[in-house]
Length: 58
Image (cartoon, rainbow, N blue to C red; front, side):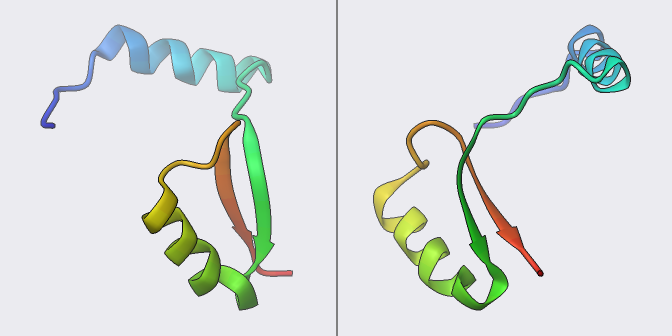
């Protein structure tokens, strides 16, 4: 899908981030050492239920 950003929407996201009210649901956090496994599962199964996949370095 190709889309064009809507300036008003991007501005609202920026305002929410500035206010500290932007919330991104996180479904799973994995260390960098498990990134390949987690990304392979994500590719196979699709978006994790309940939020985003976060890969940490520490």
